[in-house]
Length: 420
Image: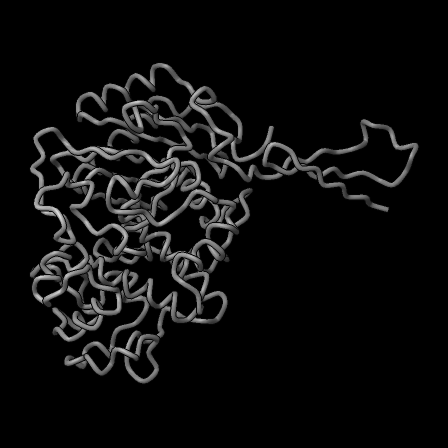
């Protein structure tokens, strides 16, 4: 008869398989390590070092005046390399366990949440957003443009909902919104939606695409409506916990809101101060009060570490050995290439070669996920913004490609996701 004994130690689990036979030789007992469940605490810079590659990263940081960078590299669902460079704040070095704002990489997490709900039969890509059969039909009374009733969940995921930021992105114009509507406090998501859906759409849903942060706020509210849970609770219970990720949280706005283990953020020395998003301060550092981070929800509010972000990708890539939390059909839906002008579901670019890209940036943050056809995944997040803004992710993508071509064959053959 098979006997199973589970031992806990150092935050991870070991499963011992053997037979209930007192004469069984010790050598016949197989010890199978399971996944590390405290990944952020188990990793350190000392575990990952390729001196020449690290020098290239250091030089890149010097050129762009970056204070800190976190880099994790996966191949075939195995974490080969996880290292922090520079500093998380004046007194603390960056490590693999340092938590960082993820900006629009948060949209990928939200898309995974939607796909989980679809697999549970609670919402579907073709589900209407508004109208009698719509998820958010409580807002129908505010709609003045019938094109809203053509909008589906998939349109929101692909930035095809019909929204435009040409008059200003409501998700990054909180102070203007407050002044326009006579508010003394930042608006609730409910109020933002009520005011925004009263405006005409820029195009018929599905006929074009324009990047929309507001569309991902709607997706966050859809998750809340169909799950019966807060957006944050659903993501923790149905996305992060099944993927064995414990370090994701929705971030705060000011330095005083910094969470345990979270990096400090930096802008360039010549960056111009700005009024705070809530009107409380006439002049703030742009990365601390310039944007309403906690109001972004699934459009850009998450913080996390690069190793756990890499593990979440592994749990949603249709490969093994990391157990997937999405079925193969959902993965195909998220990553299918249509044409050069169509976003993936959550992914900003899915190439016919099998290369997937997700980027994110705002003041103090630049984030990149690159999944390559050969099974490598590179995750790089900075705690410093540059004058190039969102275009800086092209430079970090070029850095990853350079490092891949020069050092990929020197990466150690191991798996830091597993206890050794």
